[in-house]
Length: 501
Image 1 (tube, rainbow, N blue to C red):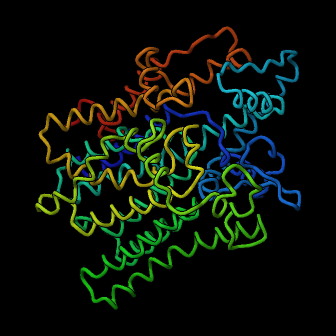
Image 2 (cartoon, one colour):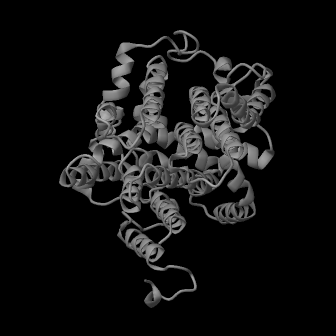
Image 3 (cartoon, rainbow, N blue to C red):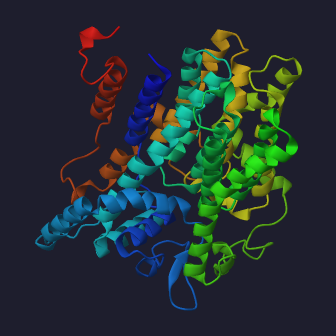
């Protein structure tokens, strides 16, 4: 099987499994998706009051305090599918208009979610929002993360690992780290990590496998790093660090002057997303250069520093890494192995060169230090780890450096624990938000296999599928297993099963 065939199968497998674990949470970024796709505007006037992050400006128009990148990307598939979704919504609302049953039951322990659902149901937005959530996950987040998994496979193979080991490493990244959990949500932090890692992979090109010219690789890398900034201002660190790396990488086969000239293609690629960000800020807030957070009204912590962003805080530093609800090394203890990668470099036993190891660690340190000064990181417990997700693909690369040097039985054990943990995180949230994320594992052990969308449907079944209780995920899991088997078993769509070699 060729590398291209393996990459395609890997992508499709991840897409199927990620889609199966779709979470129904309707987050602030979704509102902008709907406004862009339906009205062609950045204004969120009709949704003011539905989400605490949506605020009203003095001119009477409403916006949210986040960068627009992931919403702009997710709006594309929703816009293309609007003829289908609009028809479904119209049919449902027409049928509902003839029904005297106005039940808005939602059996959930979180009062804010119950209030949100009842208000959305009252406005007749529940079906639309459900479809928007599903489309943006299946046609935006799932393929984006799956693409990063393929990139991980290509990078690991380029370091000299066999295709079999590289494929195993890619699967471990896909389902043994919190990217599994975060893919279920429309989330700008994961997008920053995906775009940043893709930008780095294009610049590095281990094994020099890429058929693209250096100019094209640098331009695409700049575009991807620029998209990271468009998704979140923390992406600015990714943009800057990749820019420095671009110059260093160009120096491998050219003079410093030539390396700097080549890096202008990287800068050229980044211009587009930066201009889009400036246009959004000018259109929404009247100034192209102030971030959306600048215009937010006072909220908790906004009086600290600049809108809640202060200098590095030691307590927040350790919270980001070790908080039982969302700490990086609690949700992904396997990534601790990355800290031992420099030792292998010193012993000349690493598959990743010193420069790339230093770059990865620089990315990790930059994000941890920056977010240790952002007060809002303390509310991650709502949906789980978010802010440090961008560094996960980078740290995972160094984790593989260590894993391939451990005894095979130890590596398999670590991989099994990592996948079991993160599958549980993707299946179920803890019953109480303030408890450890490890409560997800307890739920799965006590209650069995779950899928987030089915769990949500079971809580609001009376108004959609009356007389249906808890919906078992087993039929869907079995169907997905068959699909994945066929993905890897059938060589080409026109080849019979008996013809596979």
